[in-house]
Amino acid sequence: GQQLNQSPQSMFIQEGEDVSMNCTSSSIFNTWLWYKQDPGEGPVLLIALYKAGELTSNGRLTAQFGITRKDSFLNISASIPSDVGIYFCAGHGGATNKLIFGTGTLLAVQP
Amino acid sequence: NAGVMQNPRHLVRRRGQEARLRCSPMKGHSHVYWYRQLPEEGLKFMVYLQKENIIDESGMPKERFSAEFPKEGPSILRIQQVVRGDSAAYFCASWRDLPGLADNEQFFGPGTRLTVL
Image (cartoon, rainbow over all chains, first blue to last red; front, side, top):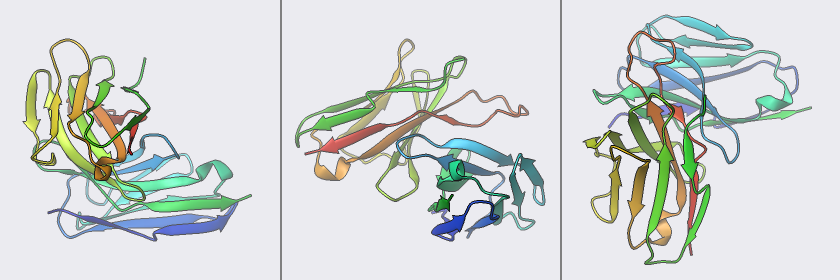
């Protein structure tokens, strides 16, 4: 089945640092999504990418949809304590639009 | 505009009991997805429903699990005769299937955390 591998698994950084995480797949996806999950909550959509090569920003977040359609990265600039959480990439799997989620990247920000 | 609602937020059951998890989608959304998240893992798709129809249940365990989305009322995920391995967070997401719109993506509820003793 389709799988998404995320790296790194976890990151521990100082406030103000930039962060980069990426997601790779063994198969092609037509859409890449990035979600953030806070403890005890559901995932919240951060950025959606629909075209290969697309680069999209949302405030301090920037994400790109790889040209091969098998990878994507998410950058967070000037991190702040509220960026703490787990970041998941996801892609639409098949005709029913179900989401295939990555393994997650845990981000911890030291004030 | 109310978001996706799930209840209960926390549910404790003993082995062998039944668990009923409810999901009310966002207003105007007629599609519901259920996902399961084990500790320290990503979400795994279980089932996709439209009103009164199960569209894709390829992620549902073959036994003890069932889901419905009636014409009126919330979607319900039912787990019969729960076992310890059913302990997880269960999320539903709603979607309205309008291609071309910026928000044509799934929006998630806060989840139900099921603990089986």
